[in-house]
Every structure is written in C-alpha cells, then in structure tokens.
Amino acid sequence: MREKQIEKADLLEITYYTDPLCCWSWGFEPQWRRLLYEFRGRIKYRYCMGGLLPEWKNYHDAVNSVTRPIQMGPVWMHAKEISGMPIDQNIWMRDPPSSSYPCCIAVKCAALQSAEAEEKYLRLLREALMIDGVNISRQKPLLGVAKNLAGTFDDFDLDRFKDDLNNDNGLEAFRKDLQEAQYLHITRFPTLVIKNENKKGMLISGYRSYPLLINDIQQIANFKFAEKIGLEKYKEFWPALIKRELQEII
Picture 1 (cartoon, one colour):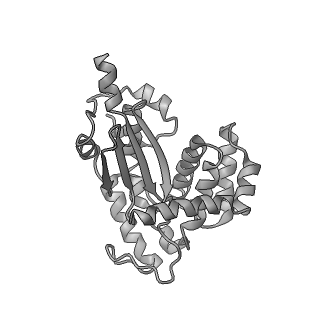
Picture 2 (cartoon, one colour):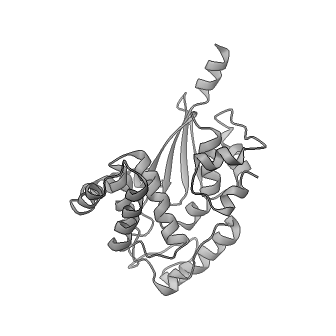
C-alpha cells in the first residue's frame, strides 16, 4: 500500500510549449526523450504549439537581437554547439522559413487524429528542418512529412490530414494552443509547465541538461534519474535515435 501511495504522489502532468522551428527545442530532444522513457507510466504529457515566428515583418527577438532571417543562423549555430544536436543553420541563408505558423498548424492536424500521431509528426518535422534543411513553412514539405508518417504509422490517415490542413480544423486547434501560450505569457521555448497530483506546479523555461532538469523537477516530485539505462530497450522505445540522443543515456 505504501509503495502505491508514493507512486501515485509522484505522477506528473506536463504541458510542453514548443514550436517546430525552435532550435533549442530540437536541442532538448535527448533530455526530453530520456525523461519520458525513464519515468514512463509516471508522466502524462501533451504538446502546445507556441507560434514562434508569425512572420518576419515586425518580428523582433530582443534577447538574441534577431530581426532578419540571416541573423537566425548564429542563434542556431550556438544551439548546435551547446546541445550537440545536428542543426543546419545555413537554411537561414539558403532558404529561410517565412513563418512557423504553417508547421504549427500541420502538427495540430496530426494531433486531431491522436497524441501519438502528433508526437511522431512533430519529430519527423523537426528532423526534416534541422537535419535535412527543408523549409517547413511551405505546404509541400508539410505534406511530404505526412506522407512519410503514413507509410510507417498505420493509424495515421493522410487524406484526413490533408482535409484538416485545408478546412481550418488544424488552424482552429492551433489558435487554441496559441491563446493558451499567450494567456500564460510563454514566449520562450522549450517551456515545461509541470503539475503534481496535489496540483503544485512549476514552470521550467529554456534549454538545460538532464541532471539540472531532474533537479528542478525534484522540487515537486521524488524523481531520481538512473545511472544506467539499457541501450537495447531504449532503442525499442525510441526506434529513431541519433548519436547525440544515445550519448544522453551512456
């Protein structure tokens, strides 16, 4: 009985505020994936798209002094150096995305089918942008990623995705996410809003290492990270892993 009470008290609800165009959210993938694996069954989570870049007209990132696409390249290069994740910063010179709204809407189109579809689609979208340097502000790449997902995930309906992308269902879902993020004044990604069973909550904003992440979470839950994680089981849980993500558990 005591073990069950402790386990119940350590259940967490996490809302992850992010954006497919956010380099720091991509850099945070190794830590996020380890967290979900290590404490599986104890974490309930959902994604909220924050709308990082509405358009370049009148855009101003005061923290990083970014007002033009070419100025985003050094920000991505810095994220690459700090996180160790592969990032194609040259896209901001070669073919800069005009907005993150289209890809946020596409993620919510996948979410209308299931949380699993949303997570898988978001991951593929990040890979297309960060690793392959694909401009995901255009509809053709968004549909291409959806087609790839449909080829590997039977529970994803490509035709429904296309319909939701064009009939404003995805747009309406994204509007709700955007309103939520704006209501909470969340403008930095990644941001995690975490609540325990007693509704005690905390907000963790920005990139951080896994030990620091767990240290923060320990303020409201008895979470302690393992010193070793089995590589093969981890690969089974996350079939698509890159080198940096494997280094996170070694």
